[in-house]
Image (tube, rainbow over all chains, first blue to last red; front, side, top):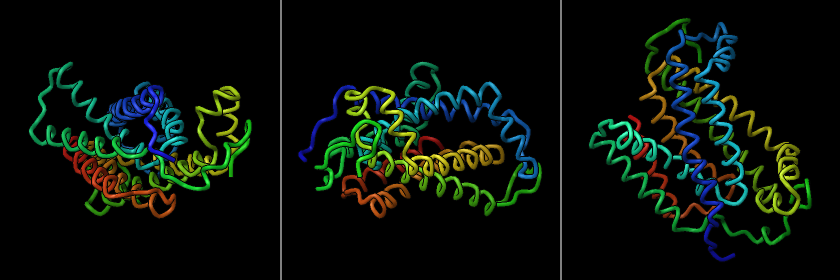
Length: 146
Length: 135
């Protein structure tokens, strides 16, 4: 199988993977840090945290991430999709700089450059490992290809 | 992993245990989920050929997918627990960057992905980058 370029729709799915994950984590963090300390002795309070507004929005964003992540994994390697997830951190950092006018330290700029370089490395290679078995047709409706 | 009730500043070993739990559970979940999606096939093709319901049915009738989701759910609750006891500036970069490396190793060992020099270089760059960015 030759190295095929991803379609625009597939790039859009990778963009969704990139955006939804860091935004969801940020909402989760906001929700959890405002709560009192949770102990393993009271696991019910951990479940109750799921229904607080910030955590609930975070979970909704993470569900969007998961749906696009699953789709991406169905046509690309895990080691191809994961850097796209990390690239979301760069997008959030740049948004915080140019939209919220937050300062970015030299270390964070170095992090942005490193992640961008890493994503560039992966993006130039094949998205899926070549396997002879993959010549088999995709499973018919609702069934799995083995 | 036992933390005294209401502990505000857990020790270094406890913190490392919390982060290790997030990393290991997350890696198991992601590798199992990736294996499940590869066994199903291209979801875009299934959706184009048989519709969205068929694509959803293909996912929810795959047992391996639910094993992966179980591990991801455990990783999620481990993350919530860690965030409640540790600073985000520690948990986020440590778990995110370590997970990238453990996933690359697991993908090569268990999914037999072609993790060539380019992908190792990318994993290391992104790992250090995430740490610098989030710390």
